[in-house]
Length: 267
Image (cartoon, one colour):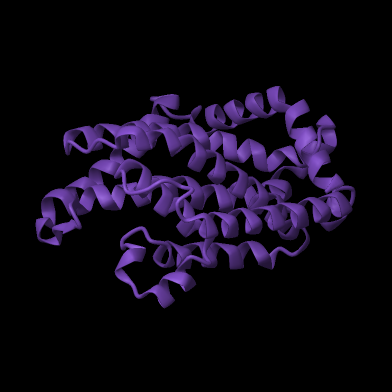
């Protein structure tokens, strides 16, 4: 656990630097565009509008999932996924793509996944704001269940940090891993309950689906906004998610500490 505490200490001590570099990356991505950083808002708005037009207007025969309009059900899965997928891909490649910057500026390599997560976080919160407007339009009120939203956001952030810390280390050493990860993420898009509900399957199949930790996050967001349950009600599922997250974090921290001084040799 020493490696874990050291990694978290580095994040805390370099938090101002992480914020500055995340903002710099966002500005750098849009500096050649006339609308600049406004694209941070325009991109998610366009994505939501496209899905609303296709599934909310064009395919009305899709109907509802329970009492929830399908477009709302779909967006509740897509919003966290639009944050998860690029963060996993970019965060896993963060060490390989920026290790030369670290060698020049002398800051811990472990902050690179955090910079990616924080940079994508701004877009995520904009998507959540747009989602709130959609829920208001359909007169869906989560009520007191909205109080557990911070829990699922923190769960999402910690899992993504643990996973990208491990993946960024592996990806810097074995470049084939990054290509394999991209294929796995594309596959997980269909294996994660985004277009469908876990509850529509038999209990045996549900148990298999729940092995995917991303299913815990997506289902949790739905349960929160649709007022369908508290996170502590299924304590066994919660225990599995956190056990897996901590395991990934411990393995990722140990691997990172063992290889952080050798990254340049692999590049």
